[in-house]
Length: 272
Length: 272
Image (cartoon, rainbow over all chains, first blue to last red; front, side):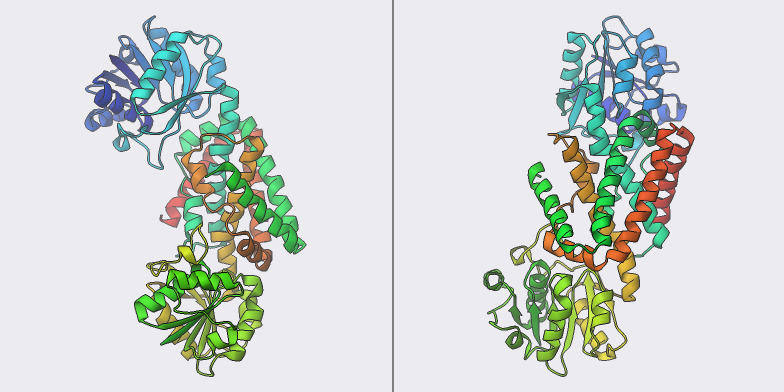
């Protein structure tokens, strides 16, 4: 089994490590930043780096592209141009509609592992990063059954649970599950620093801002790519904030209690 | 040492347990709900409950009132009416300006332990709940030096770090550090359920909503009592959300990158 990883950050590096340690795969890697290749070799994620993307992917059975979503369409096109005719190709971008619409090749299937950390870089990569996590796959109209099956098998061997989902539905869900929480985390942090930086923070603040300030290059790219859904999510969030603001302004204790009770019911409904 | 706890929920029960286990204090307790008294006896937080608030506090050296902030002014007045002339009295309400302005008695000092959990009730109480946490004390104009010193000593023995702060400043800070994060948690949950309840949640969503749906009686009371500061916090948050929404709407990648970088700088500035 030969696996190529294009983009050697936290996720790409963890895929490389998982492929080496769990599948005894021969793993090649490439990154636009030569120092990332050196770091991946030092971390043991790849045996040696390739100077050119084309040579990194030329012999691979499977290629994973792990780069900010803004550069993925171009990157995947280049991977497909140099990959074997019987290779399978996937990506790990946090948004899926754009890339799935941009690529029409039977070998390609979009993917998104729900794993990560506030950390970044191959030095923090781990073969265990995907253990027990969900890994979305978003087949496009052209995706072959073989690409679905082979990428699913690889991901399963990394310890993740595969979940197939429509790309547009994925992006709508992610706006609510991930992108809005990240926006809120940044806003909470920004508001607190506008009020004054305290020496003491409570647990609700620490949890609510854990992901604040996450990798700016990756996250600005995610927000931009999923801007339609994130704008809808922010608009709905503002409506909800305005409603409770109105209850507060009117000192409407009944309405505030109902709002808090509804949140408790929401939590029970979500079941966790 | 005789300690009385008025209000036997998670916080009151934990104070009772800490006083018994760490100070070998004789602890009496009262709650408006007789079943909470029974539960506190069952949990070992108090040896026996008092049928009347007056008898629970009559002999105490120190009294802690742990009830929703909306009932505290009336409750503290009743405690002070029945407590010894040389007793000290404090509360654990999450907002402090209202109670500090309402009480003018040398024996009283407002307090707020930054401890708690998504859980509630004396059955989840623990003598270790305050270990390593910060416990704000907000002396009023009438508070005696002795009340400050004796309540500080008690709190320190519970394992908490005492921090004195002005009551109004406390409430402004809490709106940013705690109340807005709770509002955001409820909004994130409500938005997700409006989009559709997924089977898979990411870590940023779990962290951002950990406190969603917290005890409705306690939290509606906190929001109401601190409504001026919470409204200001929500208004500022909406301004920040509108700004990033505008960047998204214009697909302004430079502005989005700057916004993400500013969040990363905010986090570095906060230092954790």
